[in-house]
Length: 474
Image (cartoon, rainbow, N blue to C red; front, side):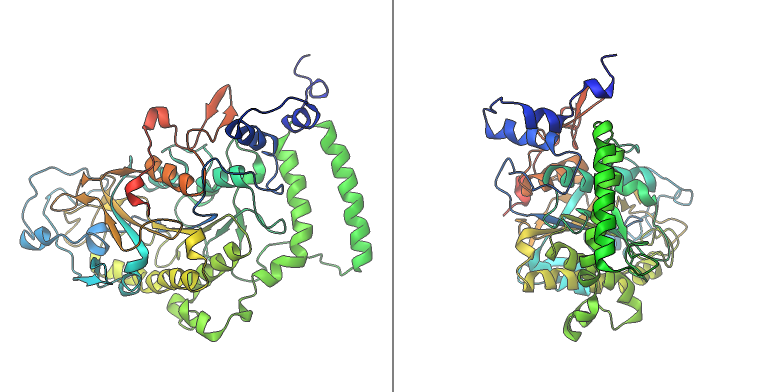
């Protein structure tokens, strides 16, 4: 009886009708979050702390890029090539039982004024060394792709929790009411490892799920009517639909899925007028198209997704998630067979556009307010797998951060002599999430959603002891 929906007020209704005053900015902020939780189409609330950034582009590198072949030079591996490593490593797949150290086939060079050492196989990322923070001391909690990818995107190794992008859009909404707040750009030929698990809203209101945009054909399926109709008739149809939706919504005020569906229909109507122009890269100059590698078949696919990511954040989208190619495989950084050839193949597709995105954001004055994350889910082992490959390593990996108030030309943390474990400046995935939220003006311990009687947070700080890594911040 007491749970009948007709006898309950939604959070929105309670706040609209209540005459209570809210005593502090923080309390006002948190209650405002709950009041607007069902929609990303309301104005963004004031953050808890001064924000250095307002949007995020995550360049997710599925498969586990090798830290000692890309970002973390280890001369000791070259000196001890083929020797048995004194510590028995954690293997995920068979083939590493000999525990023999494997030197990187790539040379490292000092790049930029900062002198950051980066691999020869990522020369274009090396060209932006003075604009990035390189974290060499990341650690995860699982050696399997799915669990580690889910953790990197949600903070825990098991599915069923909201993605980082969902939390951010729940807190901040969107600055463009004609586009979704959270957009996913994947290879149109297929899904990478773990697919849609990486942009779920879980128990946050359903409107905060990532929305997939395609880079081939229509960006958003079924956006335009199949039978042309006049603008006046379409306007009348939409007005009638809006009235019917509002009537239906008022009967079920606590159904977030229903709210999300209605909001998405309303958003789709507005997107008909604006999405095409935002996604029309034909308007870009030839110089910009070359900057992203659109003139090269090897880089064009990934480059187009990076270019669209810039156009989307420029248009007010809060969180854009970009995924790598699905060729030569759907987890393209997973170099089990041959460290030389497999890394060279994926770097040839991803390196140039990744650097182009950072350069373009900087040239347009957008880098200061946009955080770019370049990362996989874990790293690789220092020992060989079947002679020339590397198995998974949760104990150490590297990632790149750019813009949004992070230090430029800075290297943080260190691993042991062979790159197996973190030795200095350890950064966990929850630490990273806490730091990202902080740069967006959010306190990771106070961004809360009530779920099944518990106050849920992204970082679960009481368990993970997540902290803001201030050593990374300018």
